[in-house]
Amino acid sequence: MKKLIALLGATTLTAASASVVVACGNTTVPEYENFAKLANATRPTLDKNGEVQKNGSTLVYYIGAQDNLSSLSFEYALKEATVVSQNASLDEAFAKVNEANGSSNDFAGNFKKIGNTFESNDENGEDGLNLAQTSVTYNKKKKLWYFENQTDLMTFSAKATGEKIEMHGTTVETVSDLWTDKATKKILNDWIKPSVARMVYSKNGQTIWDKTKDATKIKTINEEINSRVDAIKSSKGPLFLIIRNGEFVGYLNGFEVYANQIKPGDNTSLRSKKYDSTDLTHKFNESIMNVVHTKNVMTTTYESTNTSFDLNSKSKGNWKWEHWDNWVIRDSKTSSESDSSSYSYNLNRY
Image (cartoon, rainbow, N blue to C red):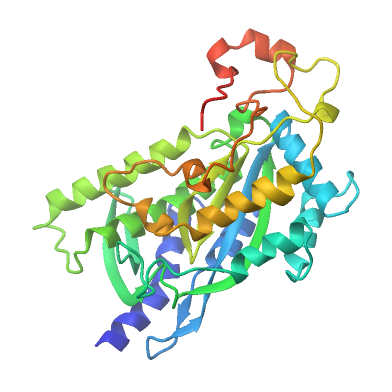
């Protein structure tokens, strides 16, 4: 029976996500399709006997804005660290990172080493909440997520997790497009939200659901799903989404503003600093490593007492950007016409 459940879970997990895409429209959005392909590829797969056939992996996905100085500063640092031209595309820089083998001590090599030193969440190799690999479906008419089935595999267990880690990303035109751009809106609604639904149902622990008898429970679970996704909408960039083993774990956000990215007409109220290569080689990599390796970080995200996907506090103090612009437009005229709270920056945020 377990083998049958495992097989059903492995085959329907992808189907559940696909049904959501259809529900939101058939228009193809290349940036979203690329993200979904990368994120889905991190999911561990099972063979017909319910054994792990392919280990899961980790994806760090960057979302920046073309008119945001912190985004431009990160992209400048990334291209410097990967030794590509500043005129090169982001994809070229990401390719350099992902092609590294982890033997070097530069930024790309150390980033790849993060996956090589994965630590299981506990001595049994299972996560603290025992989040089983779960499949869900969405009823568009009722606007409700429903549990379908589970496998015996714990989503974030050492057994399920491989050493592979990659970095990819995209940019939106302006900061206000963070979750309203065609691609990022679909990332949120068609990929992140189904992932949140799977994990919230998995956390509940109930494996047999009756849509009539359990209607109240289902409503409560859907309220939690919606509340969690709404919280993500309030995030500010640049964002670094963490996807692991086919599920959304959370995000880190912010980056420095480098003086060499400031041009005439930019917002002069924003502080800046000289470019520092260690921002990536040390602070960035160490923060990603701490987030990925922190005991139960993958599961504390989905504890009932936690409603935030902000992982900054999990970086053990490394993720501190004193010159982060707090996700504002670089143009001084546009910024000055906005409400002051929209571009003020809080250096005590972390």
